[in-house]
Amino acid sequence: MVLPGETIATGASDQCPDCKLKLVLQVLHSPAGYYIGTWCHCGPYSRESGYYKNSLEAEVALMQGGFERE
Image (tube, rainbow, N blue to C red; front, side, top):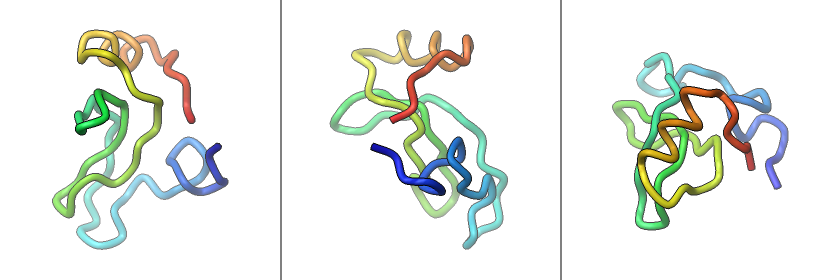
């Protein structure tokens, strides 16, 4: 369950409060899998989707804009 303001989609800023970088949705990877989220100079900022099995699935979801937000 996502709380209001926890992701960009639910109201979080699209700019890092520390380094001021504008955050852009992209495919990222963690030990849990591939996901759509944001990253800045400070590190990972948000995870906007659930996890995907591989980068191709995540890339397609990002390009189509049809990814499921948690």
